[in-house]
Image 1 (spheres, rainbow, N blue to C red):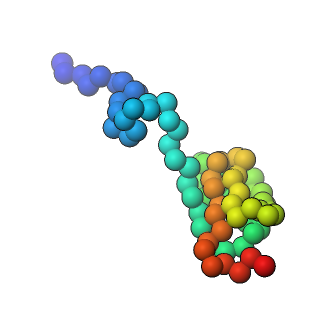
Image 2: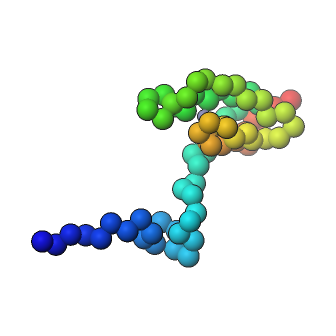
Length: 76
Ligand SMILES: [Zn+2]
């Protein structure tokens, strides 16, 4: 019986840094105010609004998504 080793520390994703978290999803937006609900489904969370303020990005506290203001967006 040939059973593949179930080793979570494979180097297929990030060689040299096995503890690195997968890169969060980056979403390009055109406004400083964004809404995130995790995309719905099993990974969803209550809808929350974020205001970037003086920054040009914001990260969701629930799902770690990063909303980045698109280049050239009229933020002001
Ligand atoms: Zn979120």
